Image 1 (cartoon, rainbow, N blue to C red):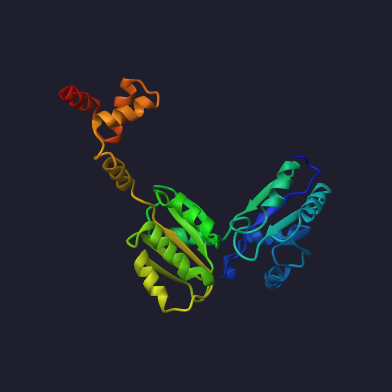
Image 2 (cartoon, helix red, strand yellow):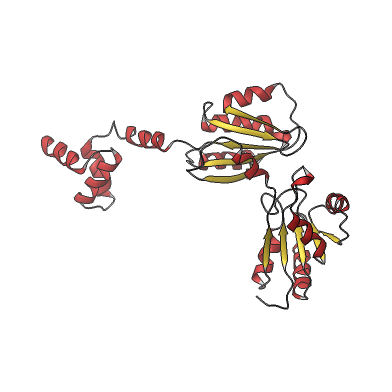
Length: 286
């Protein structure tokens, strides 16, 4: 890193409750030379509330790449810049990655200033065991082709999944999740996190769908969906071989180039048996 360069701070801001801003975030927003904001009008309301006079400039998903280069040039001239979005942590389903990537490529130090994040808030209040890990999916695509492709890739996901849902897509996205993962899959739906009308509904996807059928969607939603049980996947993998003879099963792997010993190991694993069991079955039938 070049000590003459400025620093780019990726600053998390409240997702609703202004009391959630950190002392470090306030200090950073006051001390930097410029704030690059998703919406300068929205950010100015936050800055005015905390009596912060720092200048702002617009940087969002519609900003062309030249603006990113311009900000990087300012950083290389020694300016310190803070990157913020309308709410929460920048780059998590929000614009900003073009700027951070370009800054990193130019040898500029990029520092995170942690704070509120809707995905993490919903995750830790879901009641779902996180030992299996979790995956942040973000918004589900609106076009049919990409929606189908995404769900196909995730239908056997064993990790807990986090989705963002806008109010106008709530009912169709909930139905899609129930159709993909099964109506009995456990989930947690949160809306208006940290705000006055914050609410979380927990239970089976079918019950969450029913609870939202008669209500008008309002605000932003986060849904946390439990992953598929690994034992269910294992049982399904075993069952798919039940109608295949041991000989045909062995031949599948031999045709793929495995020697007989390795093929027998794979057949045993597929059927949740010991290798010796497979050997005995083949010997009896020979």
